[in-house]
Length: 256
Image: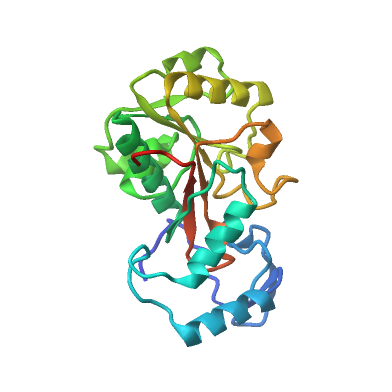
């Protein structure tokens, strides 16, 4: 197996249940990071396991969605939109959070006809080439240049920088809470000013809640605490409860 870090833990895990994991020697561990924000209801939750088993016995793969009606996807999309603001009424499923980020950038460029993408310093949005291009930390992206052009990084909570969102900006992508940076939440005033500036310039506001969404902040969606609604919402990790699933949920955008 390809090594993914310079100092892997090298623990051979053989079982996981609820909040705990066990290695090959029988030693028990408490999973303090929920599989990096994935197992929001614990490992091997009976309801999740049962649903996977039932679906696997029915069918696992047919053809790309949009060609065939696949009821489980439709039902899940319906369930999600019932718990989102009315404008977030379209669901695009992907396999990972990185793909959700890529989909949002493509959607914004296609809809607006613009090329500029604005993200923020210390942000994390995935590991694909496009996602790396908007990550706000040189540690993650330095080895993979050249990156996507026309990407600008601003600073959270800096009101003056919002003027750099202009009629050339296709979208602004922001984490509602910056996770990799140390669980940093921007101010309510700044988030509302960001929403207002995007509306003023016709720029799509994309909020990335892949790590911080689905009830981790006292409300189902972290953006609820700011009193704003994004144009596109990115979800992943906990969305699949252990299965590789993510999505972009955009507002109704004509021509997109």
